[in-house]
Length: 173
Image (cartoon, rainbow, N blue to C red; front, side):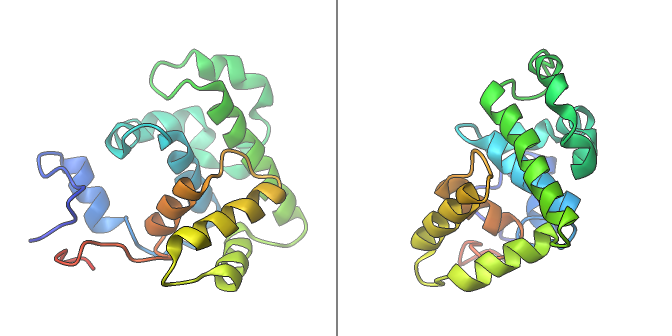
């Protein structure tokens, strides 16, 4: 079976992630928030590092339940002391901030899924994903999201199946 070149074929977690999660559509707000948060945490690091810390991230961030993470502002120092996760103050604060932004959307009867669909559908240029990622990043920053750059947005769109960037020879394309 052929997989994308980025998959470490000696790492069962990477194989399982590629085969069963990466590029699959996601509609659940908490799951979308988890994926976005992990992509945010990955910035400057390898995906393998983040994937292997995912269970620790879930434990540290209340299983990425938006309504709980939004209340974690007082927990930043504890999170910075957690050696099982990425201990970057800006990234941790961004995750908490982003939970607040999403929670406020939900309080106004807009799911995170619907918000993402709205901006993806309005600004998606299929043949120019880089331009699309830049536009979406700017919109999300304007809407209050933090640590949301174009590279992270592109990875996020790949992860949740908005764009299909499996390698040409990948059997999961």
